[in-house]
Image (cartoon, each protein chain N blue to C red):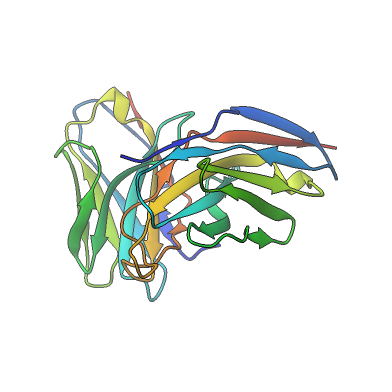
Length: 113
Length: 119
């Protein structure tokens, strides 16, 4: 167990809806990164938050947005869901932005129908 | 841009035998880290081993070792004495680093190799 928890573990949404995924980082960690893992693929970087500010973003459209709270937990919001958004969403926390070790949660499996 | 390629979608090995998973990468960076992550059916990514690019010595963690060939941009993982619990997806990953060894960005993953350990 890494101490990183994600909720919910599974959910099903309809195309066009909005979804919020949550991540509780490991105690003492101030950096959270989000990844999207499509079926049969490796994880792809969505964005990173460090001390409540976005600190880097991958090649994802603006309808993917995030937040980090003062306790360093984080949310990933996706608007106007598309079928291709169906994937496993992984959250990873690090002690600080310069840490090379990331601790992953068990992921949220999102299905868009 | 950096890319990571794993050319073996699936592999299998008998329990107690040795298996090697391949990974190649492309980068123009001098300072970086390479990783192998394991993703069992529970879906949680677990760090197996890490290699700093500036270190010539290959990293080792118990039954897991790497063969890091910087000039060839190759980073293979050797699992010795394979166990049933080693059955999982294995991902090779790249991360840029600063001149002082800290992270300078996100992880870039390959597509993974599905390893099955048979009794």
